[in-house]
Length: 483
Image (spheres, rainbow, N blue to C red):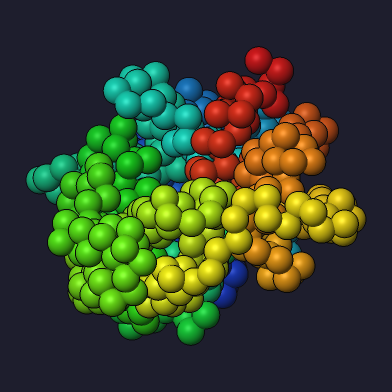
């Protein structure tokens, strides 16, 4: 709902306005009324409405002065000026101070609706631009960087979401990350949605709404929603990125707890993904000895800890990659099958049990030694087909595992072909073509960075931005600006 305040020095005109439009039916909520300019400035400063319907002639402070003061105070409100025919020049002057439109008295419903519709469109466009700026500022935020924190504060203030006082106490913010499904808070508390990946949205919410948010998530998630993660409350905006990433990690509870959709981030996000030492000893020893029974014992020891919520997707990713490194010590080169982000892992396996079954299957299976198939006369033709496949599908979750299934060859052989034919490993080649395309889109289109991330094969905005900076030495925003 869009908030609106009505300002006129004659109460009967305010009442007339209230009855002229079906405000609720058109997506508006009247958040307050004021009967002079001074009172209106205080009300608008406190309530922060989206739209103010302002009479141009009022005692104490007229409508023009009110709009000027609101502009100087950088209070983001769209003002629609109402005036009689004799004050038309005043209305034009108000437009010079940034008024969104004007209408003449007596009011005509169609004219008011036309102005409100136009104002709503401007609000949506401005809000979208601010949210995109905020998302970029969050990514580019460095620890203890006062400049980036100040920029985030500025944007949150423009979005009316800066942490502040709620009654007698400081009120914080928190993040919720939802994977799949629609907007769970569309009819609930105010929230700032930030699209952080394909089918993944982070919502910033106010601490006072935490009980309602929890209830909505527990009782009102659409069936198509895969999972949701609730982050911890923070008052310092320098913690925003950390808390958002923690909420994102918690949103994969469906993967680790197998069916439980809602996860909650730990109060202090862990810095390392520690796994049960005894389980890891069994996995290490079992892999070295090619003893599948020991490997099964190790995995069976870990699975209940995942399902209980003790471990998160962070631990699952670490387990998967550590097991591949164990397999690499005994047979074949499995390093190219490492996974680098949570979306990749969750996209390949439906849950942690499926992942563990895959890992168990690696141990004791027959491996293809590196180079064993190089004598195959079809090797070069096979590689040309693989290269064509990668170049045509780099926008999706293409991987060595995917290619192996597509062409019915062992993953190690896929890795061997890239090194033999291009003198570069598969991961580096794939990253290179993705980043080359990203650079083209950044310089040649007006697509947002998050949209570009999706177009070049990255489901997570933050991971894409991290990889882009690692590859080019610049953030996507700086690269686009030519810096």
